[in-house]
Amino acid sequence: MRKLCVIFGFVFALVLVGSAQAQEFHGAFGFGSVTAPSASTDSSGTTFPSLSGGLYPSFSGIFLLKHHLGFGGEVSWRASRALYGSGTSSGFFVAPYRPIFYDFNAVYGSKFGKRFGGDVMAGIGAESLRFYTPFFNCNGFTGCTNYQSSNHFAGHFGADLRYYFWGHAFIRPEAHYYVIHNNVEFNNVNVSRFAVSIGYSFMPGF
Figure 1 (cartoon, rainbow, N blue to C red):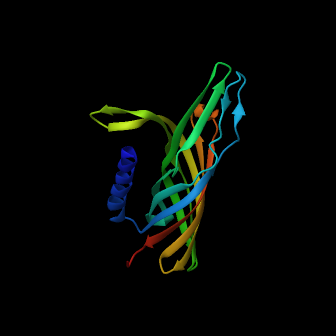
Figure 2: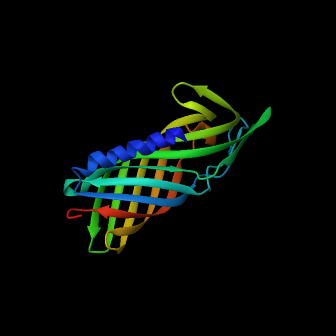
Figure 3: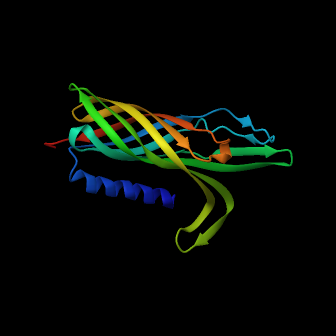
């Protein structure tokens, strides 16, 4: 989880830097799940599991500057480990794993009356797959870890709708789509994530 803490620290640094110039800042915490194509077999006979399912907590922050334009970032991870299983004619590989998704985006956001707002976004990020082992590897930079990571660059597209149920506090259904490069562990599939977040908007005068 150390790398995840580094990501959280980076997002928090963005909050501190961006809040000085932002016209609005929307911070939120949510829960959701991912959907992806079902398990499949390629032309060589290798079977691949599906990425679908699981509970995914998430943290996100959006800064809106002038003309409703801004930037944002988020991170989401599978709360519990899943069991990865892939097989060929020569054997079968099974290991516990946890996916992590993070992205940084250009954002267009606006409010619609007093109660509603919304954002659309596009950017880049990554899928980080952690495959857990029964032993620890130690080095001077990351310390000791009991997993090996497989990281894949991803394009990200998302949209959300904010409903302000009390003052500047909102609930936000949202949808995200990750175009994952060379996602070989899952037969090169892309992933959708759907979530509901609760958050607060810091606006001028607050």
